[in-house]
Length: 129
Image 1 (cartoon, rainbow, N blue to C red):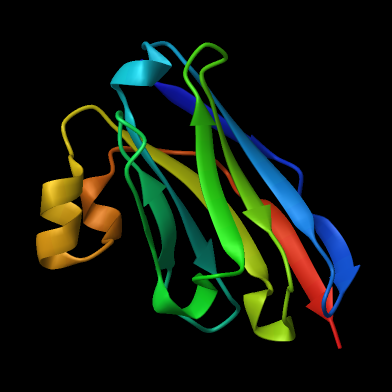
Image 2 (image 1 turned 135 degrees about the vertical axis):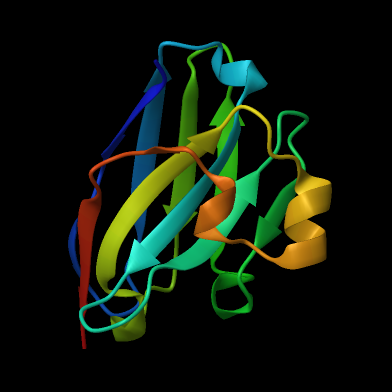
């Protein structure tokens, strides 16, 4: 069974940076499609970024140029480097993974939570103004 566990959340001031990590286990990390989602109080869960097995990436418009998603297949770990953080980036950040999904589907239909079968419990990111 695939398990993913997030770490690295915290509290920063506006303009600051944080790096989130997601460790995958129970399945070869290099064979998983992986992504980051976030959920703010009172709002729907939204896709932030995703990375395919070959390293191709996609980002939500709201984080382009500020966030960078990467993966280390030798360590079965995915990262989200977040710079120039804004108060509106505050939320619970989730790591997600899937055995079947590929970037073509994401590009056609959007970064939807329904594409992912495996989820972490989330790590809190709080950005103060």
